[in-house]
Image (cartoon, rainbow, N blue to C red):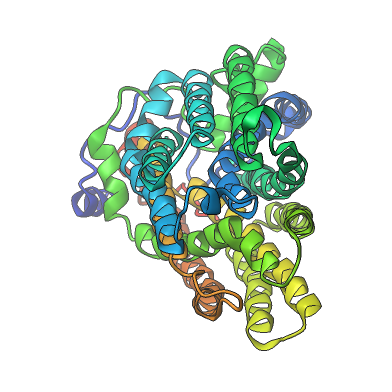
Length: 483
C-alpha cells in the first residue's frame, strides 16, 4: 500500500472493506465517462429509463410534497379556523412533522437499498396516503399534531454522476408542480364544501390522500429494482449501460448494511459545509411551500384567487430549474449553478421587504421561488456526485435531508407576523445571501482536492484496484469531485 493510502486509511478509519463489487479502472481515468464505442447504446438505454422509471420517481416525489404541503391550502380554505388553531399551534403541528421525519431519515435511507426502492418507496407512499386522509378527520389541536407526526414518520424514509442534476431537477420540479397543482386542485376541491356534510378543506385531504394510495399500488407492481433489472432494456443495452454505471462508481450490490461505512459520512469535511447549505435552503424551501398561500392572501385576495395565484411562481420555477440543470450538467458546474440561482432569491426577498405595491410584492415571490427551487436540485446532485460508496452516500443524503428538515422547522416559526411578514422575510434574505457564498466555498474545497488528486495520479504513487477503492472510497485519487 502506498504512503497516500496509509495516511487516508489512518485518518478516516478506512481499514474496513466497503463492498465486494467495486470495479477498478485505469489510474487517472476521469470517472463517469463511458467507452466511446458504447455511447449509442448508453444513450438509448438512458432514454428508455428516462421515459419509464423517471416519471415513476417524479410521481412519488410529487405525491410526497403534495401530501405534506397541502395543509397550507387547507389553511386558506378554513382548516385552522374550523378546528380553532392559533398561529402558534399551527406552527407546532408543522414542526412535529419534521421531528419524526428527521428521526427516521437515516434508517430509512439505509433500508431502502436493502429492501429495494421498488418495494420500500411505494409502501411508504401508500402509508402516507392513508395518514393524509386521516388529516381530514382532525377535530382539534391534539389530533393535528399527532397526524403531522405520523406523516413525518412515513415520509422520511439510476443514473451516472454527470447525468444527475437534470434528473434531480426533474424530480425537484415535482415539488414546484405539486405546489402549483396543489393551488389549482385546492381551488376546485374547496368548491365541494358542504357535500356529504364535509368542509372543503376536508375534501382536499380525502381526495389527495386517496389518489396517493391508488398510484402507490400501481407503482409497487411496475417499478424495477435497479436499472439493470429494467424489462425494456435488451441485453446489449444492459451491458453497455452497466459498464457506464460502473465507470461512474455505481454499485450494483452494496452488500449488507454497513454501519461503520455510514458513520464515515459524519467524519467527512464535506458534511460541514453541505449541512450549512441544506439548512439554509431547507428553511426557505419550506417557508415558500407552507406560507406562500397565506402571504399572497395577505395582499388582499379572496380564498379562491389566492389558491390560483400560488400557481404561476412555482410553474415558472419548474421551467427555470430544468434550464439551470441542463447548463449545469453540460458544463459540470454544481457550485456556480447553486450560487447563481440564489442571487434571484436575494433580489426577491429584498424587494418584498422594501416595496409597498401589492403587484410588485407578488412579482417578488416569483424571484424567491425561482431562486430557492432552482438551487435545491444542484445541492442534491452535488451530494450524490461527491460521496461514495453507497452507505456513506445514503447517510450523507440523509444528513442533508435532516438539516433541510431542521431548516424547515425554523421556517414554521418565522411567518407569524402578518400582513407584512417582516421577520420571516428578513431572515430568509440573510439565508439567501449565505446561499450565494456557501456553494463557492464548497466548490473551492472540491477544486483543491481534485488538484491534489491530480498530482497523486501524475506521480503514479497510488494503486487503482478493487481493494484500494474499497479502502478509500471517494478519497481515492481516481474519484474526481464534481465542482
